[in-house]
Image (cartoon, each protein chain N blue to C red):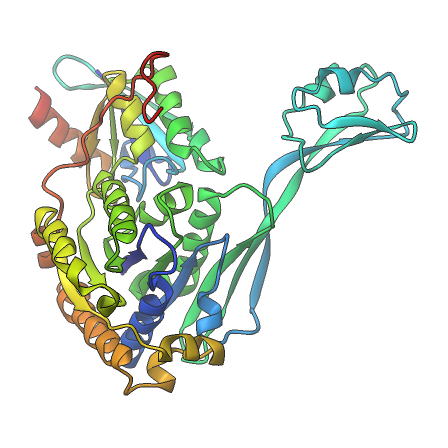
Length: 325
Length: 112
């Protein structure tokens, strides 16, 4: 069992394209593989595989929300006064809790002399699992619109994936963009990271920030340059970053109009346009990941493990010295 | 010395190190005397495991409240390591699945 995370910091650089190709290549090599979509805010790995139906759909409940038992309520209005979030208002002679604002802190319930307020779990989204048309399972989640980003949901996704795939599967985790809670949860417990970057300062900046997080978890990484020909002059800068940080360079993928075309068809690029330039590069890179990282993990881990964890730098904020201010 | 171990299942000294720190299901806290002998073993549910976000912060806060001197986990996220380091609690990384007894032996080798 190995858990390989595909991450980039910046969005739209090709995480899902690489994740889907890698999962397919592992499948074609007869390996047990599970595709894990760890982006619950904008899940779309299933769209690449053309998955339209889910075999398992579970309600995911995380936050709390207050409810009023109106048969006990005597309209005293104490709850409205005490609510620290100003989530309770008198509407048509009835106190109403605005569920978009309520944090479920229960201050109102404690303050209520009639004991008319209780709390319930709110539905934060869905956990779901199904089969791709290519024989291997896919697991993901969908956050309800406006619900807070959740590392716990990503953990639940990974746990469900492991229930399905067991101890002898490879897990390809397609991480969310950014370096926040969801991505922290994607990295925690993983075995290695494939960084995807495009040759732009914005992308390198985001991947460098992400790599600091990777070093917290002392995980080895490799890097892939996507859309390499849109700005080839910038590639040496990326290679210098990789060398400085002891990140394995796996190769580059050219910009290719066939990529958006395949997304419209809802089929993986390497299935519909196997001869396209991006396909060939993706297949080469996925084969390298399979041979050099997955089948050779112990050695690869030793060679590319960060020398030391990201150092802890205390952030001291003084009124006269606001960082970035 | 008082050491907290992030574990998947609470089986006292027979527990094994969890796959992650902030969302480990349980902590086993072991008190050692000056010679490294086990004095007391306690088990606690990790409040960080349940939280939607800020798992590292919650679990670190919990260990701070429990007044541990060191924390053992597979690796430590940015928030957990910041809090523990700032408060002088040693963070020790050990591979997931390491049995607690073995982890204790290794800590004795390093720290006594």
